[in-house]
Length: 86
Image (tube, rainbow, N blue to C red; front, side):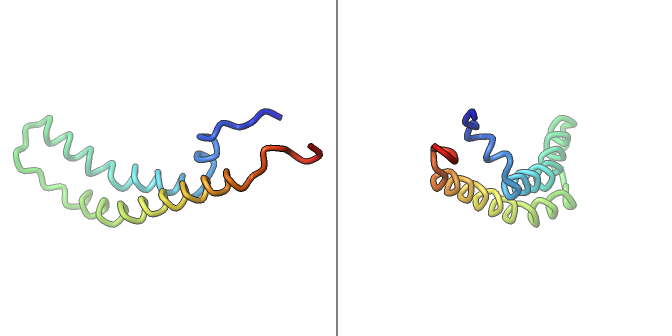
């Protein structure tokens, strides 16, 4: 059986997926609002809704991402290199 690349394990982790999704869908609207206002030349953008969404989702998403990365890296260290019957 071929060894799986280490980034595949990170992508398969549900906790890492939740953390990345939270960062993308929580911070994405705020970043999009800032980019659009900059392109339009608005000197005083006021994206209150996306700012509140980002404020509520950023820290929990970051915590999920860090916990998932630590969890996967510890699982990778505890698994053996040899399969059953080796």
